[in-house]
Length: 624
Image (cartoon, rainbow, N blue to C red; front, side, top):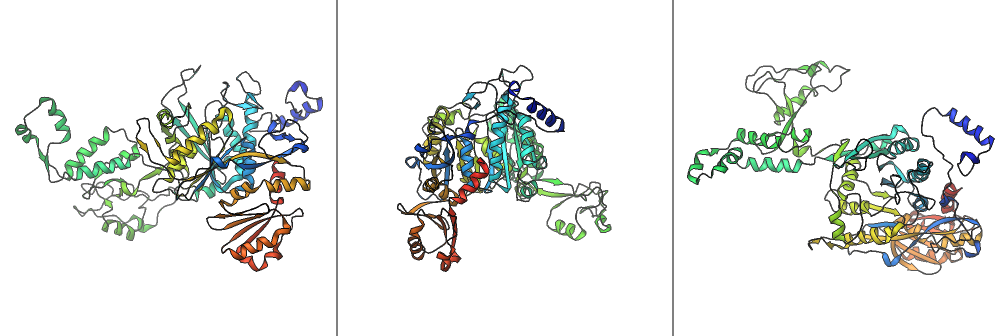
């Protein structure tokens, strides 16, 4: 194909090759995959090689991205252990750098990419906003997403998952692209977000939903984790509290709530109201409980817990049928149960009981078998709501709220941010215990805010976010960063009520560049500008020792040493001798030497890596 992607520019050979390719394709996504994106061919004048973060205008050789810390924007909170990361720059360069620092380390990729609506300020390709009339609109978007999703996949653990919001403009294309990159067999399904607010500018069916696509890197391994694709029953706490409050009425003389509602307009005197009072018992509180549940609008799964037992616990019955339809249960699984009052045999399920007789006996002893008023009803298993607080994540949820008030409280001007509640709900409903969450379309920082709040929950701890965003319209510097900083430090809401701080540490990086041609000078330059990459790779940020030849940083469980001059190796040996604990050593070497002989006596607590070859190896695979 020609580099422009325009058919008029193609040679006869190009056209013949394309026709042959199209005939060979049986099923899948077809688009102009060769549309060039200028980020992939970034070049620089060797006389002005710099890691300033700016792309020089004069060009001659390719660039490799590095990270440069904006130290004045670091946020530190007293006692905080977790360090989060915000990277400003083109997300392709950020993902390339992360492929060195976090290869196969990320648990969740959670993104809200541009929707390619064709409206201005939605999606930019090669420094131009893509409009609806652009004949290559969808191909440009697919090229853009394809390159980033492929880099993102390399960051996921085998048990990792990618979650992507999208609307009707590209949902079908994104699904097929994810099938191509992650394979259809790893599709976890899609979640429909009902926004309860139809689009007013629709020319056809009025759209009031958004789609959230979920793919695992390896579905089998992902599903082997505990509690994946489960959400908390949203009204369970409310139901349990109502059951407990009704249970407290047992033995008391009170007017039933429905009766009280009926007589209240008549304003009876207190002495006449006495005649409406009844003594509450278990049967009466169960009647009130069922009436209350009917008017709440809860899901069927929650509303099924419509009984209160003698302990005040909400419960329901579950079938005790043998689960396999194709295989008959063993003979002993057909032993009938005797009704506790009539002492007659109860019906046995057609396929037999789920459990053997000895287990059924234990369940009966524990009071976990539910019998009907007589032997005609098949017994069920008693399930307490407090023991079943979660359910399978459903394919649909409704949320019509916005974060307008939140942004007013934060004193930030930003429209159409993804609601914080939605981000928290989705992350927990797909993967409730990730260690690292990556968002490479971070925008206003909702994912980072969600992680900070989830870390504050009792059942979630130690989650780290990595956010990547460009600075289009100053969104990183003026919206995302100040939002995260205020959430970490605490702020006041729009009514001047204090919102508690969510203590954490935050590192702010900008993508920067060094020349890629493999000269000794450029290898020195890459190493000199790789400190942030190495610290991020090892999650070690506390500076212990710093000079022009050697830097030492402390992490949670080890130190890292970065030696910029191999002639100074004796200094590194002394640091290891004087410092207890484990060390990961990065030592500059033009020839990729191992240096193991220098550290043989420390081999039980030292790992050695030569730089820059370990970095160059990753970048060669990405940039070619």
